[in-house]
Amino acid sequence: MLRIVLFLVLIALAAAGAAWVADQSGDLVLTAGTFRISTTLPRFVFLLGLFAASVVLVWSILTTIWRMPGRLRRRRHDKRHARGRHAITHGLLAIGHGDSALARRHAEAARRHAPNDPLALLLHAQSAQLEGNRDEAQRVFRAMAEREDTRLLGLRGLFIEAQRADDAVGAVMIAEEAIKLSPSATWASHAVLGFRCARGDWSGALAILDSNLSAGLIDKQTYRRQRGVLLAARALELETMDRDVARESVLEAVKLAPTLVPAAVLAAKFESEAHQVRRAMKLVEAAWLSNPHPDLADAYAHVKLGDSAWHRLQRVETLAAKTPADKPGYVEGQLAIARAAIEASEFARAREVLAPYLKDPTQRVALLMAEIERTEHGDGGRARAWTLRAVRARLDPAWTADGYVSDRWRPVSPVTGRLDAFQWQAPVASLPSDKGPTLESSAFEEAMLAAPPPKRVTAAPSEAAVEPPEVAPLPAPAAQDNSPPQPKDAAKEATKEVAKETGEQTAKVDEPVVTPAEPANPAPAPAESSPPAPTPVFRTRADLSKPASAPTQTVIPIVRAPDDPGIDDDGPSDEFTEQIGTPKAQAGGWRGFWSRWGA
Picture 1 (cartoon, rainbow, N blue to C red):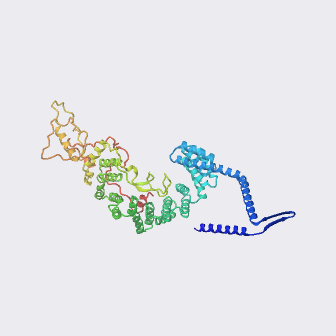
Picture 2 (cartoon, one colour):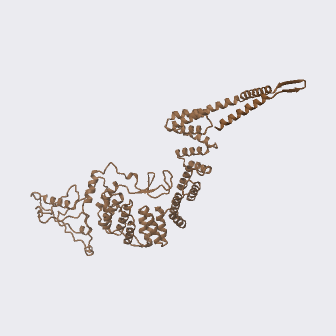
């Protein structure tokens, strides 16, 4: 509306001016020397307007002719640029869906039409990477690193190529140069941090972490956690070299990350050495509530120096009671109780806490049961059966990071270099397999575990001192007897009943050997009212010193599984060897404490 009003006002002013000029009378005379021009005012105004329009037209034509070459060059450049952009766009799309040939054609077109475009260089480098031409890719990335606008992108490409070539030193040098250029480069700081951690340069790693916080790459909570991880790693490394620095580092680490298991264990050890028992127990309890771990239970059990095994068992039970039964870490507390109960010779308590896990045991459960059988009853056969079951049992939780399973905690992942990557969890290999155990091994285990554990018979002191009776010399061989051979059915039936009662599997029942000195008459069959007494599978030394009373008292052999290597008769004692007698107890006091920590 305003424009219409303004247009009408301008037309009115023009009309008023034209009317005023037309109303003027008289002539307009222009004299220059002898040259004299005389005309009316309206005619002069008309001629003046015509002259101005002619001047403007001529000026426009001259300007257009003058600017024509520049406009032609600009138009040609715009067309080349449009073609280059088209080639870059479709080339990146070709790289996206993996068409290396099409990407290479578009890259060549982009290099012809837009040689200085950064995206054309990027397309050329990525097409070379897609084709596997690493030399060409490195050449393009070096050209990009020399330019001011693409330097960081070129360094990133060179870093990736160095990683593909397994050149760790070159990759770290490129990453350090990128950090100097841009401290906020996440990939560069991540690479340098992982390299310094792998090299053990904890001070340099802490400096990179502070730089990441200043650049805003991580928040305050993540910074506290990662700083605690680095301090704990430095404390573990300096534990045997510089205990003062290690103590200072781990105490700061446990303040920043109280749920970090290695930091809590080491801090509890230092506090226990300083006789700060209550503080050490609080550190372990705080970490246990977040992540139950066997090392925490062991540190809690030995928090007081010189305690007996029974006191350690009571302390572990107190710690395990802090984890509810519906929590995933409840089983760790039960396994810790079983371990402490075995050390305290409370085998009934150990069997009680392990009973819910015997149907589908893990490796640690099976090994604990093997230790119970070997220590409590000296039953080497049942211990071997549980050990064989542990070979095929599910894996227990372990320190796992990016699919890598480690026997100890580490600050960074060896696969990706990620900080604080290790978690206490069941590895992927613990998933159930389609292939079950072999029939022979399963039958052997079931036979060994179904039998009741034999009671260990220890000889009395008075009987042990008695010398074995003298053995009379064998009589001369008697004359050949033509009487029929003695029947063996009674001995076989008695032996089979003994094997059925004990639950042992036998491949073949040993028959009593008839010597010439024995009478030829057959042995009388046992009465039905008095069943034969079961023969012990394992005979003690006191039993070995006594002569056999009858040929029917045959020792039933244990059938070995096809994959059971057995026990070396004269080999050194190991975890599969049957132990005779009470195992040697662990030393107490300071000597026992240092022996537990591997000192």
